[in-house]
Figure 1 (cartoon, rainbow, N blue to C red):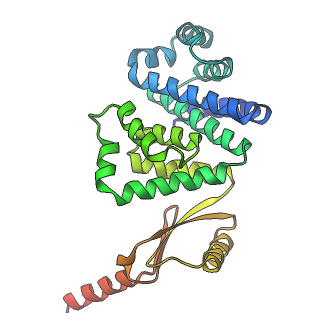
Figure 2 (figure 1 turned 90 degrees about the vertical axis):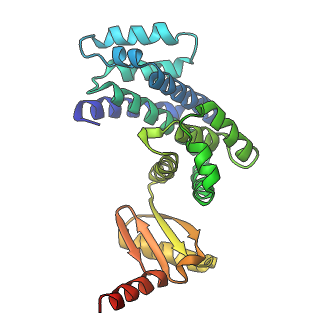
Figure 3 (figure 1 turned 45 degrees about the vertical axis):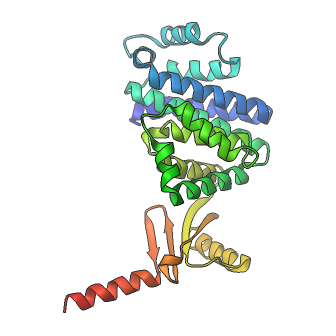
Length: 273
């Protein structure tokens, strides 16, 4: 986001956090789902998106337009937050869409936090992302641009019913819609990171050849926390093809100590002789 859009979004996020602190988790979850539904509307209706971010119209005018479109279709809490959103200054219509999406996601994460389930939602998102990454057929089905989002969401519902929390399912649906303009896999990764950020944690993605013991996992988490100076949420993936060692990625930092990497380096060195 450009500066004007960031300022507008930040002001509404503060308003959202005040609302989250004073509302029941179920009410916040409903508001989050409504915010994402409006984001979907803005994604489809380009003319509406442009009108609601038009700098030639004052904030009150844009808020009035929003109210006329959504009155009776979303709750008062969602309408209040969206009204504050469109009253701000937006550098581009796409950034208004981005703001609405982010606000909906933060509301859903806030509802999970209020329910004491944010860590579980984070883990469910990560595990689903692993499932998608490991299954090319499923990945293709969920990423198919020709298939309507609702159709792909039905597939997600079949996979996650009784296996994940409703907030997790709704967040996965946001990923299907291309949260932040990302692919499904990238959107799921970003959602995991946003959940961790809300818990004031950095995410570390660790790939190992075989599962670690609980004590080994704890020690690695403690070491990474010491390195980065904050709590770290460690997400483990088991991949026997790396043969041994471990690969650790934290943000843009990558530590590749796998046996496979060492073998490849040796092979390349021999090939150059």
